[in-house]
Length: 208
Image 1: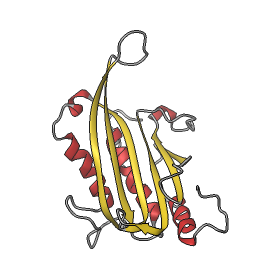
Image 2 (image 1 turned 30 degrees about the vertical axis):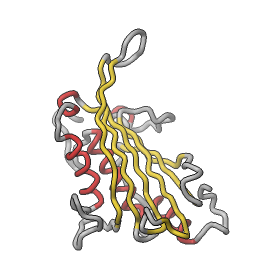
Image 3 (image 1 turned 90 degrees about the horizontal axis):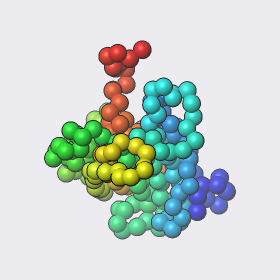
Image 4 (image 1 turned 30 degrees about the horizontal axis):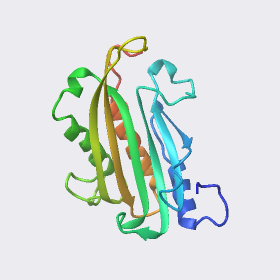
């Protein structure tokens, strides 16, 4: 089921959804609720995120077909699941168009995975947040995949003749229902990195 605000929803699930809404993300990224999967857990909630081009920052998009977009799904099972090592699992997916030179770089998967591990404060090869992490994100059982693909268009199909995409899939277990907004903020940081956005507070040369 999704989060409907019904009184029979577990308090931890309602608190987790509310904490997601407390996330603060950069203005280039549009975030909103989307329909979650129905059969992965007794309770679920999902948000979609899309990086908007600079000229469209004041326009709310109606379709998630931008050059970088993704979704973050919250799964909650009060009984817990052995594979999760907990009761609350976050599942992330993002896709971004990348330049040819980056797509052909053999180190791209390692770089993309480092975006996830750094954003969550989890050193590569570790499973929990280290002491003193700048962002308060507590996770365990982090895992995922990175895929780089090339598409070639033929015939009467709009778009560039050759395009390169980066896909990142990851999931991790949240140790608490509190502070899930930080998990969404971390996910949006990864989306921003995949889209090639400059760090917050940095202005690109030639930008107005």
